[in-house]
Image 1: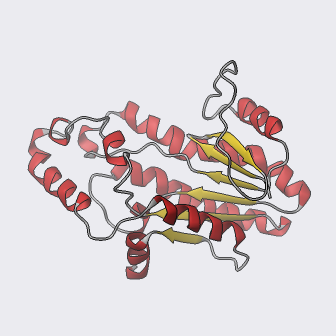
Image 2: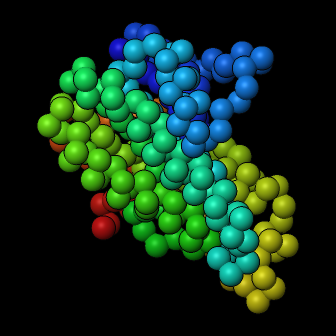
Length: 230
């Protein structure tokens, strides 16, 4: 099985024997833009036949919407939503012609509950959820599957720091929101259940091999708890 992982909206790796690889293109290769279909198609052609596409694109964003510049909103959607669509569109012809293949779009547990400080990020991931649900119906006649994996909060990664660009939250939100935002962030980082990276990897593996028609796969104990509470 050959798995192609798309990181930041562009294919980065190919693997044999069902094990993802992480080999970036040579340094001399120009970096493809996230939604340039031509460059993405070229990357897939260089990778060779692909059995599974895992779209693990993710630009984190934490803050209040009133204080979020529209340029930042577009940046988040460019990777989290449009990059996912572009890589998916590029790989579908070979899946359809072969009559097999799996697309796994990694979203987030923010789609499972009401979470503060995530309006833009959640909107970008909810868009991918809706996209994947409809895509799965389009691909079913060709025996091609589409799934979503919904990771919980990976508190041991640098997600929160990246989401705030390393800056303190009280300097990133409008002053009237600061007390509320600081409390919300404290609650988020102090939760008793959270997700390990291995939870996500194992859930992606299950989604790839699932043939029951299931669409959504929460990853991590906090994500599973949210899914069960819906």
